[in-house]
Image (tube, rainbow, N blue to C red; front, side, top):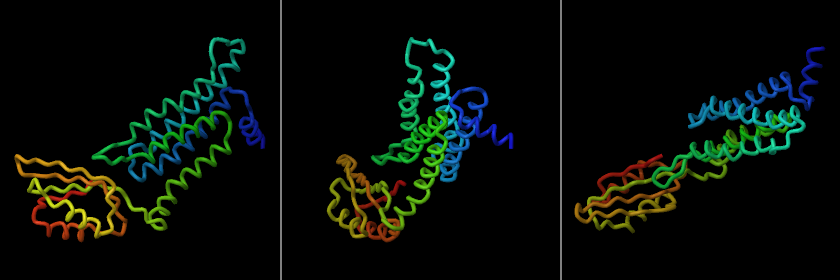
Length: 236
């Protein structure tokens, strides 16, 4: 009983000492790693180690913000709260690094948002707000796991891909190609055309939204009927 009483006192304590710092860092590690495991399983850019480190770093920043005025009550040259406040600004650089832009399509936004959320969870854990930190962790995992299923099965929103078509002519029938794509209920979001009149060659680049139940084989077969098309690529 004494052990659990001591743990309860440490959890409720607003004073930053060795015991409270240790417990809050351990809780922070568990919460950050929980989200990191989900990202690791999906082989995302940031995984278990990244999320655990971000959460630990945010928690330590919050602990410092509380410890400095507690230890130096006469500290007047600056605002110690800025240490924790700047965590959210600095974490934006990591989030930007997780975002990948390729041929007009953007990947990694969910991972970037998760990085920002886990930093806030770390700050909450460092401030002793354990229940909100645990709740947000559970909600974040629920969003990452269950809402993707909701999007795919219920909303059937599809996924964005890049469709690149090479034509062995500088004057392809763009309207015919567009009609072929749309006939498979593939929505064209953006399109760009690169004409090379000297080499008599054209590259058509489409950003398309493809339903999950759509098949590429039918689309490829339809496009191959157009004689001027020499190559088709779908970039995921």
